[in-house]
Length: 503
Ligand SMILES: Cc1cc2nc3c(=O)[nH]c(=O)nc-3n(C[C@H](O)[C@H](O)[C@H](O)COP(=O)(O)O)c2cc1C
Ligand code: SF4
Image (cartoon, rainbow, N blue to C red; front, top):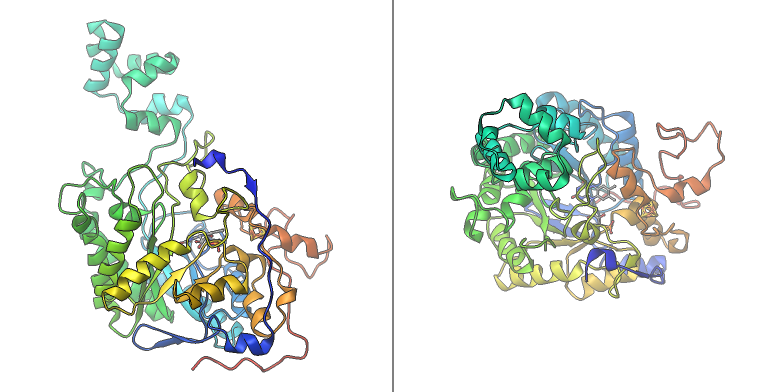
């Protein structure tokens, strides 16, 4: 099946919500030990979601605090804070942890989650590195400035035009010619990477070792990740999650496409080397008693990419190296992403691998619900066969209690995460636990939120807007003035004080 062939519209799976007494006996609401010392009160989990609410300097804002406060009110066992940059470089409204000046804001975030979850939710932060991805340029700019006019490009022109004089033509002559050239000429004389830079925007690979800053990644990243983890600990987070998934640097090191020949690419042993070195550096900096988890891909879902066999092999190595949990995701790569409009950057959730990462109700026969569970299950089996107890977290299309409970019962994972369902209704875990499951606002899995993420707009859920009167001064709106910024509030009737802090 190819991505455009998704055609069946699947209904939401029916939900039979447990009574409060049944929920109290449920596996999903039972505690779990993560790492040496930490216990989460339940196995409900909110995976990282970027809401695009930080400042352009990467600092926590009141809107960021409100976003996490709202999730905390639902009292999940674990709440993972969005992908947060480990470098101190401009990266738009994405949180950063690349300098000590970010610690106070993050500390407030942690305190907010503790307070609003009444101490029940454990809060981790996902830390990531990424390499350069530029917007798709105007052809005038590309040919006028960005494209490097090399001797080899001149030679290609001379060959294609059957005119040796092109070998000596001035840079401005070449630029002017290319700007007016037809598509066949462009495709013939540019290299694949130059053509990609024109059509999609310039994008670095971790195997571009001719670039010194890319060549040096194995020497730079362990220290950067370790320092970021140290700051996370200082800010009071219960743990850090190393982002080895989706389109970013560490996932690319693990990828079968990683062709580095310096001992950090090629074979599985070499591809996992830097991810293990980063893990070791982080562990050395934060100590054995601090939770260090990894989120990575059970399958890249791209041509020539890593598959489940690789993921099983990596998972056993991560577990043997002492990672405290593994959270398994799928896809979300740049390689198969759609061409962006001019002025926009390529978005890694627009191709088939993107579909697999955040599947919608418009799907193949298998449908979007629990679609990624077999990956976590296979990795977990291999880890258990190796005699290791590392907890596995699964996510992807989880929207009912039965789904989650079935996954735990069958031993397919140890924790069950829900991103979009929790966005639709941040209270849903608590509603189910307290016997109010029939009040859950169910995610429709049509990805309005993901569309906002794609445009780096403040992420909200379309369902929240069904519950407000425009002009109501009590409701805060997104910066475009048209959407609710937060989910409608909920509290259980007469239920104050029922939620004991986790032990
Ligand atoms: C708005 C949005 C932002 C996301 N940001 C991240 C992120 O920062 N890091 C990450 O690992 N996954 C991110 N994801 C992926 C989710 O964590 C999750 O893996 C995916 O949505 C599938 O789970 P679901 O079906 O429960 O939504 C994001 C998803 C959404 C919808
Ligand atoms: S916007 Fe749509 S897909 Fe996203 S959380 Fe809301 S209902 Fe679910």
